[in-house]
Length: 125
Image (cartoon, rainbow, N blue to C red; front, side, top):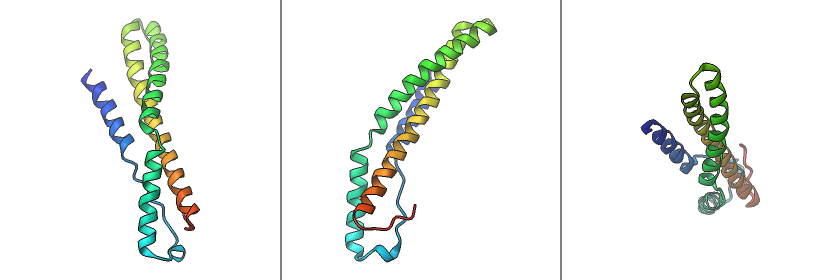
């Protein structure tokens, strides 16, 4: 049980730390002060409009349910349904949570990038 809690704690921490910073063509930066202000505002906008935590929880539940079903089938074949059910739930939940982290970070990057482009910067990545 401690391993399960640890795995979901790690996913929660990953969900809360988006590390994307757009690479901007220096030729499109007219003022350093304005650039850093725009970066901070776009980062805040992306963070406010990305529901990574909800995405992780939803995908972890779906993954857990699918994993439980698969695990119980494997357990029936192997002869230990309960163990298969438990193991499938954990593996599916962790995999689903990881998917939620990935998708949440992708949304964050897209919002951040689009905001910087909208403010006149040439974003290279």
